[in-house]
Length: 432
Ligand code: EPU
Image (cartoon, rainbow, N blue to C red):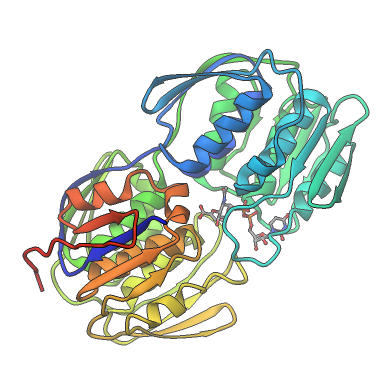
C-alpha cells in the first residue's frame, strides 16, 4: 500500500508549474468520441482519471497515440461499439460524460453509474436524465447501469436545470452538439472547464454560444472534424498550492495559470493576511505573519469552489479566532475533519457548517485520505504540522494531482512515498 510520509514544519519557497485542468480533461476526452478525425489534445494532466478515460476509449477501438508527456492524438473515427467495460467506468465519476458522447454518436449509451469521490451520498444524476429525456431519449437506470436510447437522433429543446450542475451542463452540451436543432440550457453551470469544453467543441466544428453564462445555446451540427486543442490550467491544483503556502509560510510563484479563475481564492487568502500578487499568467503567494480567521461559503463558479473547501479549512485551523465554513454544494464534504482532529485541530461540524477554532499548531499523526480534495488538505496539514504525518489512501490524491509529491519537495517540503510498511524519514533543517 502506498503512503505519503511527511516530515512537517518546512516553509515553501520557489516556483511551481500548474498542470492542465482535471475537470476539463475528463469532459474533453469523452467529447473526442464525437469527432470524426484526429483530435490532438495538449496540456493533459498526468493523473489516473485521465489514464482511465483514455483506456476506456482505447478499449472501444479508439486509436490513441502519445505525442509527448502532455499531448495525445485521439482518433475515434473507427469506433464501432457503444460498449465499454463497466468496471473501468465505475472507477471515475466522469464516466457519466460517456452518456452524452455515446448517445450523440451512436444513439445509444450503456454506462456504469459513476464512481469517484463519495461525499454527497448517492451523487444523483437526475438533471442529466431529465435533459436527455427532454431531448427525446429513453433513459433508465437498472442495477447500476444507465441505459439511454434514442429512436434516431437527439432533438434540440430548452432545458432548465433545477440545480446548477457542472456534470449535467457538460453532459447535455455533449448530447446537444450533434443533435437536430437548437438546445438551450438554462441555469447552466459557469465553471472555467465548461467554457473550455465549449471552446474545444467549437474548435472541432460545433456551434455553441454562451458558455460561461447561465444560458448556453447549442445549435446541432451534422459532424465535427479533428483539430488541435490545449486544455486550460487547473484552477484547483493552483489553489491547492496557494493554500499550502498560506499554511506553511514562505513565497511561491504559481506559474502557468489564469489568475482570473483564482480571484475568489486570492480574495479569501488576502483576508487571511496572505499576500497574493497577480501577474499575467502567474500569481506570487507569500505569507510571513499570522493568519487571520475568515468565513467562507462554497458556491458554484464564480463563488468560492467547493473543491477548495477542505484545503482552506485546513489552513484556517491555524488562524487566530473562529472561522465559519458553510458547504453550499455537497451534503457530506467534512469527512476529513475527523482526520484533522487526530492532529490536534478544533473543528465542530453541524450538517453543512464547520466551526473552526484556530489552534497554535498541529501535530503529525497517521491519517487517511477520504477523497481527492480531502487528501490534498491532509497533505497541507502534514506540511504545517510538527513532526511526522503518514497519509494512507493516497490513490485518491493521485486521481487528480500530477506529481504532487515531487512538486512540493521541489519547493522545500519533505515528503516521501512509502510503498511498504517501512518508512524511514530523512529529518532535515526545520523552520519554525
Ligand atoms: N446534483 C443533483 N442532480 C444532478 C446533478 C447534481 O442534485 O443531476 C447536485 C449534487 O448532488 C451536488 C450539486 O448538484 O449537490 C452539484 O453537483 P455537480 O453536478 O455540479 O457536480 P459534478 O458534476 O458531479 C463536478 C466536479 C466536482 C465538483 C463539482 C462542483 C467533475 C468531474 N467533478 O462534479 O469535482 O466538486 O462539479 O463544482 O467535474 C473534484 O474535482 O474533486 C470534484 C469532486
